[in-house]
Length: 251
Image (cartoon, rainbow, N blue to C red; front, side, top):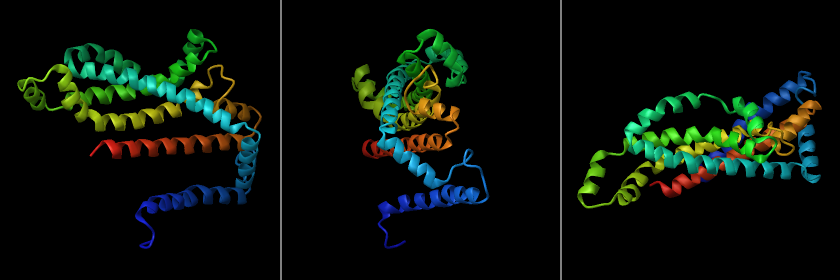
């Protein structure tokens, strides 16, 4: 282990974890006689994944889901962060809005599916709404509390030196809350990505969620597992991207 470069060690440890906690129990379950409709063998899942890739089914589904999630996530950031800054800077407004925020943030995205169908029909707007909702409160509350936590002494010092409100925001508040915003974005994207299954149940005819739901009706567990693996790998890749962004921006 001492000869392995440090940059490779987390990857190798993670690979060992996958083998020990996922692949090995999977093989044991198959050897114990678990039916294929419940848990298909690993070679069967690999073959199905190759067939979905070679027949141009998996990649378009992934791209459709990624487009929806990226748009919903960006909308959550674009609405949650500015509103969080405003509420964080004006405590009385936050006190007035807190009952509504606390009431709605406990309603899971799945609960909005019937209303999303009634409001938006079969359009993309219903799916984007559910994804946006999944990430909005995850961005809003950390932003509010991060702004609250900014030292008032720093703000007073900047104001004493003649800084305008815009300069205070750009030079004091924004740098102070950036680490919390990056963590919130990381969690918010995970929530948006998790909610893709709910979003693509809203009269959808494309995407990973639809592919998995259709496979479930046909008892194609192998396709469901391929979809789950694709969702997990994409989520892990985005998590790595956010980690890289945090290391570059936060010192």
